[in-house]
Image (tube, rainbow, N blue to C red):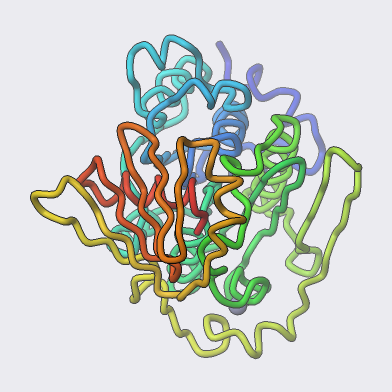
Length: 341
Ligand SMILES: [Zn+2]
């Protein structure tokens, strides 16, 4: 089939044209996270004919994903497939001309710089702030543009970051939110329309950037709530860059530090997680949301949630022990879903 035919409607769209399509086919993109946002983004950038796509995700496909994660189906669950593997198979059937590389890995300070080194753009489709802050640092250090997205409930955010030119995630958020203070999709739920819309806005920004149509002066934080239809385009303001430790001082504390340190407790089939930001967790409040995972009990000192095959024990300051695994990546994933980080 002639390539012109596949991309004909996109080429006919004047801002892209033949020249834009050629730029897309030469472009290299990293997509981190293959959940509700990442599956939609991956589907669209592969269909659009981006030349090379690297996909990274640490999780397996589960039944609770199918309500919104549009690349997966029941067969993937029966086959116990990692999300990256399931997505790769589907995406290859969609567009065999795209070079797709997949990694079933936890993205962290030890590997992020390798993953971004040979790409033009990084797309964030993560579910936790800890890893986004690592991406923010790495992209600032290497001057790599990236696009932040987040969605929970019926609400979502998108913001392109052009390091050195537009505000970064630290400009927007300051420090890492303390554990237990941000809702997660596991605790607050999420509806499919918002993740599809937010991912689609991310892809639009990516297409603009990759075809030379993204004007740095027009970069904003986009916020949308699909339940109330409240839509906002927020100017984070370049003033924030002057006081941001990443943008103004080149201080990459999340790349060089360890916001959520993990220690495997050998012989106990458990991992201890120690957040750098000390929390003061309200167990009564958290017990309401964390109850969706399993039986919860708590006292003044610790909260325990039994979610077989895992057991989470959480202390007031945010420190936790996850029993049932010796793998740091799995423990981090459980922590970010249940406690939020
Ligand atoms: Zn900044």
